[in-house]
Length: 283
Image 1: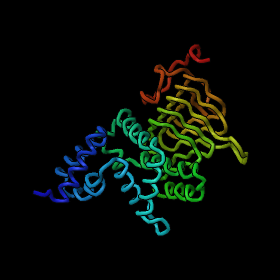
Image 2: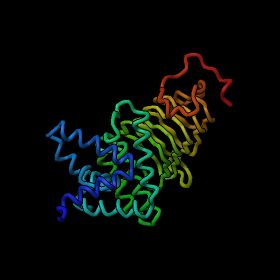
Image 3: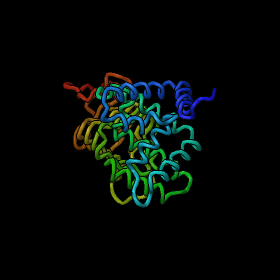
Image 4: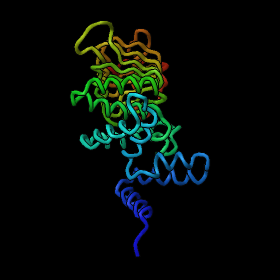
């Protein structure tokens, strides 16, 4: 007796999910939600349950958001698929970013939520594809994707910027990241943060944000300055000079006011500033 093609396809998707625990968890969450909320059932099937992998689902979702007359959804899906196939590290970054969001953001109660609803996650994954295009010498198309990301998500990341894994862009509205900026692993960035230049200087002119840094809402970090490992930048600060590792800075211009009480403040997400500055722990 032959199995119906539709059932074979569904079985293949389930088998594929079993090889990827995070993707399997997302499918289970979405299946439950589709049963609880009939209004969203069609959307949830189209974006998640009809796909065999996390990469496929994300490509479908981003294509629907980024499509325009010049770049139709099917072509965007093909671009994303090409990037993922040529650079498997993108798939790992996607998964690490989802876990980072769920670990640090109390608003993310399920692994499926960043995938479906968080524009900071969407903008970051689009950047990963644009960065791959930039590295392939396809600079015009990379810049086009940057422009669409800015228009759709309100997040402007130059495709040449280098961004690590485990990144949380919380809310993300108004985030700007310049061409020569570097963001290492396990960094948390709040909305309206700028990693920008100081004027018309060319060359290496944007901030370097090291591992585990927490950057508060509205902070502006300008110029080719280094934000040391495990530093904390207070909300609304303007940083114009290097910040030593494991120091807390705040103000306009920002000055050292203390030290975080954890090695990686990005993981703790505690934006409070010290009441009694103690500079002994900062060097």
